[in-house]
Length: 453
Image 1 (spheres, rainbow, N blue to C red):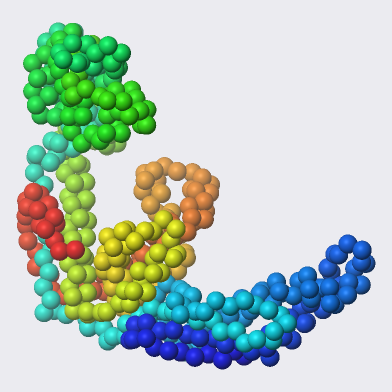
Image 2: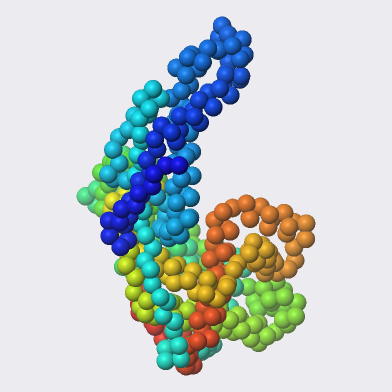
């Protein structure tokens, strides 16, 4: 057995050294080389007749490497398990590790050092009835219902071509553009055509366009045409250029409106209502009631999530913990090829906040004997699919889809953490005091936006 030495750098960083003497590996190497003699294929020798010295010369170093690597990993894992060492991520080769060259003939001792970031030790402080939280009840008015009903109509609407009259905000215009230089069409300049929603235009451009009709013209700066558009989109979609085209581009273009199309909103008739709400909904009033209920359910879930976030923030605040930031920074960089120093600088604080919650959540789960089994995950995935398809899904197709989704580790992890968080918050909510408060939707969004994260 290797000699194991633990050296604590501080309360949260430790280094574990494993030293292997020739007694730990020599017999294993000889035994494996002996087995290899019966299977090794060496030109000029029959199986089992390769001289031991030749096998040692050809395979000795690689066999030694395999045995050392295997024994290091097992010895380290056994030590961590036997001593119940709680650590983050995985052990990393120590910064103090000296470079070693394995040599089968030297009979040397080999020492391997690993750095670990330790989990903080703490006694969990629970929330209780002195911890007061707000349970928001959000008023849903006709404005929210009108907006959702209009969205459904828009999705079902067709666009019709308008030949007379001015553009309105909900229209889409198709335009031909030419690049200008000193007020005239630029020789060899950009010419292109595309369609754009009027409501997405920058305000100054939109006000120009709202006064125009088919065949009218207006001037604009391509990079200040549409709200939120970036250089890549402008060059590719508005100007028809490749991304790597670095030609000088004028700040003035002239557009000619070639076509105006307008939404033709469907009537709230029986066909529309049946398609969007089911055959049981026969009137606009019934549809509005269903929309209101859907919005209320959605907002109730959002309000519940906000309360849960406040509970999470409070219990983290009640249980301050320290973390091995130097180790975590290094671990993130060494285990993720896409990670950079700048990204770690940006993300480390949020990463540690998530770790903080994970440690507290896992401690609560242990104390409350909460476990999420694979069958729980399967049931959740299956239920989500049934809800998505409105229960109109063949059982055979459902089973195949669920099995396929459960091959994805990300799906399993996300579902596990969702279910675990639900169980944890159910426990935490029972032990705190909540007070109901009715608020308007805008007020709730403002509260949620200003919540400390």
